[in-house]
Image (tube, rainbow, N blue to C red):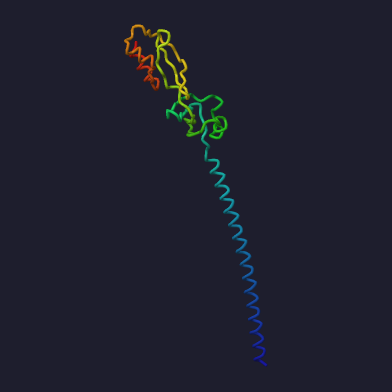
Length: 192
């Protein structure tokens, strides 16, 4: 009988131990889950704060009153590039790249910096820097060429043709083609 009481105590002790173990395990898992959830929440809050700080620190590039606007045009038929630079307009100061993409939609924003914005585009034609020098009404005249090869009068100079040699007159009759303003100035200076 003592053995059966002892076995009963042992059996109760084992059941008590197992029950206590299960309860402790459940409680510790619950506490661990709560701790893990709090750590995840804290990590998310920290990440959110860091993103806000990064957004506050990162500054978007915008134009200033000292920004230069550069217009660059490539003419496909003659492969000449024409570049023009101007100071920024007041209404374009303190604007971002998207503003320029919308305002100058027929241009490509090829460079956007605080101190300079480069706008570029391609034109299927020739630039207006292709000239023909000819005689017109006793004077040397300058004509521009368009994409179709048509000559359009640009200016009549004050250089008289009556004192030129026969060879020069023949060249002018056929037309002397020059490209660019520098070449035009050089060619005209030969006749002055």
